[in-house]
Length: 77
Image 1 (cartoon, rainbow, N blue to C red):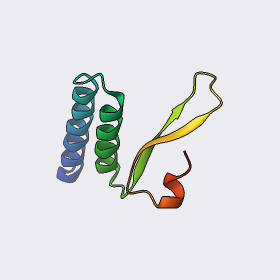
Image 2: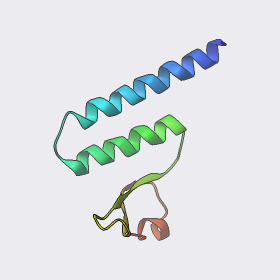
Image 3: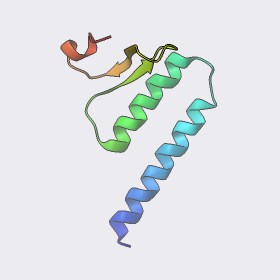
Image 4: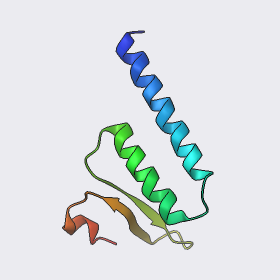
């Protein structure tokens, strides 16, 4: 394996570990999801992101915890 691949793999593992620490650090879903969106954006080198939540019925999606989305997309809640 190349040095760049090893660096990328180490970075990915660190960010995934950070996500697991966040999940276990608070019961506040809003804070947890916001931090996970931020880390996931860093992991995939995204400029914007968000989390869709699914209602118990399984047929309703709502866009939550967005970061840097254009206003037209952020309103798709």
